[in-house]
Length: 300
Image (cartoon, rainbow, N blue to C red):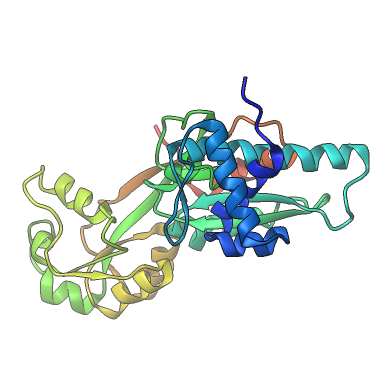
């Protein structure tokens, strides 16, 4: 059996979290040379390359395994110190969580305010598309994620949260210009707003609408914030699928109109977290599940 020196494992975590050897050295109060030596020693001990020397540094597949171990070890160490009464008074549990932008802009942040802060919990939120948040779990960068992936990441548990409902909307002027008559047939040719180049929600919606014959239009505006996306659609740049909590008041006020009456897109969301006995993580999971049940639609 190969022993894993804890100082080397902690150094690996610092390098991945800070992104560079120099930043890790500053965080650990050692020299960059010491950081480099520890990483090389750990790679020699395991017989594997653990990090890609890019900017920022990224863990290899083997490195991801050790990063997960290091993060789990740090969480268990803090809990043990707290139970023994030897934790520093300001020592908070650090919880990195991956969450999609639309959840952040609607129900997720209010849910976090419900989490008791005794003992204190510090949240480190990583914004990522819901179809890619599970990747951050795999890499060991986060301990939990709101994701559209139902299949648990190895070493994790998964529980359904509900479905986020998106409404196809446009400004009245845009709808009059591009969608008048038969909006369902004209939607594939109309300008569309998408979050980024990985956003497939609008394409999936149009494919469903057209029985797979077409995707969303080629004229696309990429707006990579939830609030900016909503503003762009309201301003008439294109049609788009907006979370129901954001769209509803704008529909009531007349600033938006439904692009395809009677249709919507539901995106199932799941909470995945490490199989780790950390009370703070369990508390957050229960709080998130309760808030999701109040904010999301039931998923069949």
